[in-house]
Image (tube, rainbow, N blue to C red):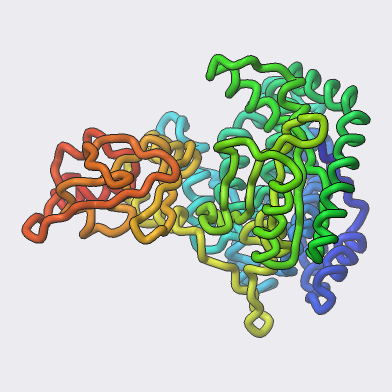
Length: 488
């Protein structure tokens, strides 16, 4: 569990920035702090904390991602449009268009045009996601803001704590995962879990404390053995144990219960976890061979996310083996660059470019966000948008392959028709059948991870069937079918 982050002053923040970006425009950061401090003078949060301290904490959390000074400046200013009479034009005049756009993107809508106010949260999220589709730094600021809010809600009423925690688990942790920012995802989940289900959180925490010495002793033993064998093979590697995340343990308990399996903390916590970091992709596969020579692998417990990366860019080799004493041990093998990207996602400096003095955020691997811009106009109510978000963005996913081996990311329950429209509109419109792993299947069948899907087409067919609307899962497919049929 990450302890609450306390930021002392602006000097501390600036020193952190200089450690990873020596040529950063520190004067811009100081100017943003002075502006925010004056704007929030005497303003406090619900927990009694000065609002400017919250802004400093959010900015400091972002330094963990080694992010640029314009994003840090926007984080310091992220509350001024919502809490003061300052307008976006004022920010643009003072700090430039980039910082002003980021602050505007993060700002929660104050007024929503709905009679009941029922969809206020959904419409706020709509704006956030659409702003993020233009610049991913918007959601990075919001994730840091939500994380700090979770770290500082201890003194608030129980109902408000639980509501804040549930929203974080339903929306912001999945969003962090979809972006590949696991560094924030894990922290958001564990802090939210603490307030959403305090009893289970405490039970897991106590068990981890009780078994810590035994687990660490085992990890040291395996790390030593692996390091020695990797060294003999002239593989420069770093081996270490992976942290146990409370919410991840809890989810495994629930999963085992649903599957009718024995679910107890001992079974889950005693499953050890290791990471091996190497310099090259070739070394990843060499290290895998050494792991399997030393320890017997479990059947069907291997995933190659290097050859088939996850849609959020995650790359690694995953294997599970019987380690010393017969203990089940999970091993992840990746390069140092993969490790950084897996942790920080699009915030990773590996995926950022500097063009002159202008930061250019990466746009690759964010197609699911860009799809929101395409189909959000088709969704007239907050209820429709919320339903689509739960399926297309925050729902469970399946990863299926094209005949050429490209990976497509689809929501659980997606069909060959969803697959076809995800590839191309014309492929969907002309579809007359589908093969999964070489076998003909109904167009309404649900796809599963690792299946190879081939769409059969007809040159004479150029319109979809209206019946497809009864079983397609994704909003992308639904919108394209309606457009082709002129059904709105």
